[in-house]
Length: 205
Image (cartoon, rainbow, N blue to C red; front, side):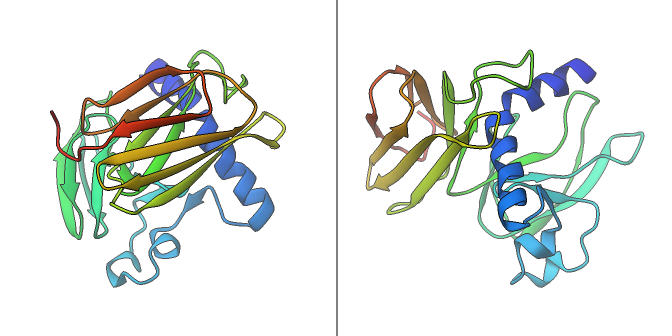
């Protein structure tokens, strides 16, 4: 169990370290109360058993020995980061998980950078990074910053969906990178240039 989640954390370091940079620069905590992340949703006002990890990931810790967990997903489309299940939010969920799982959901219109290594937390986050795209709406634009281990900007990815086309442009240090549109089988592996265009289909093929 420890190995699984330590490796998951290491692979998410491009995302987590940028969240830490945001906390340093703007004071926005890396672990955010639901009412801070969704101030317009009255259902989030009293939630104290779940939180947002950075801008895009919702975590519902498991407090019961039998693995039963109740949590709330705000309105919008959510994708389970571990299983790829896609659901519409705006309601409570109850599920039972084992020791090797946890409710970990990515919000719609999110692009989460996942690192190429899972054996250590300090590495070149931009080299070999994979962008995981979650339910990007038509016309949506998302900018993703990948820092280096000092907190400086290492690379910036500009993501834009227009109709059935997803365009991603990279600025900053050159290097290999990949794209995965979660919930589909669309992927671009080992992109060596600064731009990629993909066919975007929101349904699994």
